[in-house]
Image 1 (cartoon, rainbow, N blue to C red):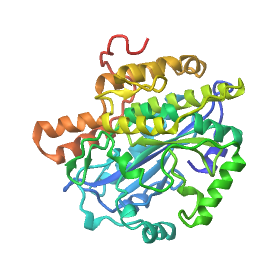
Image 2: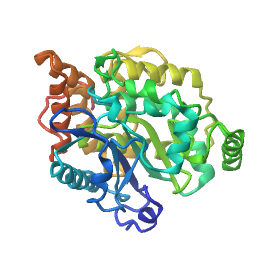
Image 3: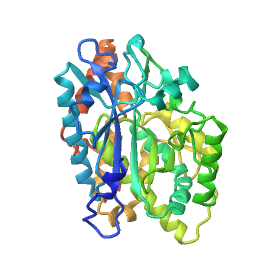
Length: 390
């Protein structure tokens, strides 16, 4: 999300409601071979630079929404940007896949984007840089005070694993099924600064640690702080970074609505004097389980720390946020999208089903391409599981 977009946002809507924006990364695929294509630069030449940018890999394009107060507006913004990039891609024989990974890769054709920063990263990190053939969804929620943003980021940690589970879309890696719903998570967490964000007493302490890491030479700039959630280094937001890219816009709207409600709840808890302790080893364990299971097996309950069915974990999360979702006017939409997501299952499961039907990885790519093209992100008539969201 660019600073100019945030500063220029019209904050019309419900008073006191934090704006939310999304950075969405897309895989660029050759429509003939169904393999990743290092042709993002050709796309960017045809797209508005205020809304689209390059990423580390030449096979990835990133879109940036404007900040939105209303989730319906966010859904329309995401859909509009997808239409733009898909239209540009189709004219070049390319497809756009919103997924954490795609299964077919011609590794000889994959290259780093031409940028001094990325070239330094390649020189320093070598194979780790080359293997970042992954895409994520980042959600920004407006937080006006940076000390508050730092405190909120840490307190959100126990609640991120269910959001990852809702986004899981990367079961295949270099032509094989990894056994994980989000293999992207395992690729990503090898960066030296990836993982749960520790507790910091203030923004000054946080910025001091970031400065120490830069001075150590292990990272080159603050942009390489890859915590699962972090205060942004360039806009006044808390940024969610744990999620895979999502083929369905409705899942992004769902995650954005839940994340905003979580931020609002933790701000209220801080203001009330709550000082709860967070065990980051349990956060890491729950995150691994979400990456392994997606929505198809048990998750770790954020409160009790025990395994429970995903419908109970996600349903409990949504119900616990109801006062904040009602405050923002999001309850009906978010609860409906959550029920649909649980009924439909994860993208990872749908991709595996597509492969099982045909035995062709190209059909997996076609499924993701088709879901990325869908224009209707509003809840469909999937029968919700009894008692999931009430």
